[in-house]
Image 1 (spheres, helix red, strand yellow):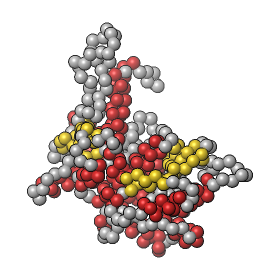
Image 2 (image 1 turned 135 degrees about the vertical axis):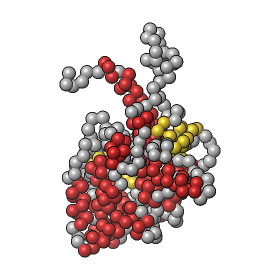
Image 3 (image 1 turned 30 degrees about the horizontal axis):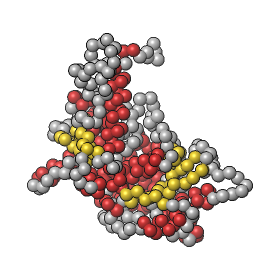
Image 4 (image 1 turned 180 degrees about the vertical axis):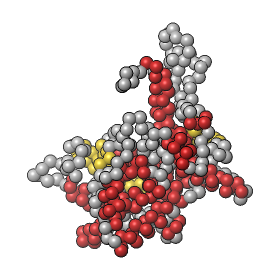
Length: 408
């Protein structure tokens, strides 16, 4: 940990689920952070955070057990319910209309309403998506977003996760099969600097699950069973569950499977850090350049020309300038905001566009059964990311004629 790029004297957030990997991570991070008169501390403080997913996953309440484990190291546990992703301002983004039958699009609009509790909004968010694979992805990204927000609110500079090499290998295969290979270097990196204000660390990236289990046994570490959406379900219930069974089965017969998959992924480069790569509004990952047109050429779903030619709505032409600049038009008009309906597909990466497809498939299935269609409901951070992206695009168009290209 001393070799990490996190500055000396910075605070870090440790994600603690209570499972075997996070239990080993907590034990060694606290030992590393313990007072040693011979050397200075690397971190000024630790924030131990647990995201409570019982509103979606269910299961027993292990909060007190987890709290006692953390307090045994002299730290306090911050428990964040998953439904807090919708915040206290009650601002959500609700589906207003779907695209044409041959167009993969999802129009949403920012709504401020106190109707319904946070739990109800969260459950509507998952109910609108039919496939279990997409629900698992959504659960992961909402959990990560809560960790990011907690880290920012507590002035932490990094988020430390307990991903082991077995979990990394499984995630590599699932991400590639879901069309998320562009962001794979970020998903497996030991130190990820994709987010401008936070660093993501995976110190157990080179330790497999068997070694994690043995460490828990030898150190006599107490952990809890952490259920997920596919606990107790058939192998083919989701892509993640099927891939896990495939990788672990190969690992039993060929012990170098996990190491080979993981180390191959570590060496695989993509252009995620190229200039102009935008951030996905849902998963915070990089959006491949021209992702929408690429999908229209390689998949059955197509995109209308109206959605591919423009990503932002122009400012209103009748707006008045805020200053007496003497220019006729709307040079001082505000940038477009998420208060107006917008096509969310334009601000999602290739993998997250599958949410839209699955939501539409679920809506069509519910209609055939004569049920009531649940509109897609998304938390407020999605709109904030879209606002920034649309504002940058609008500003780029406004000043485009004054910019000088590198080759000029």
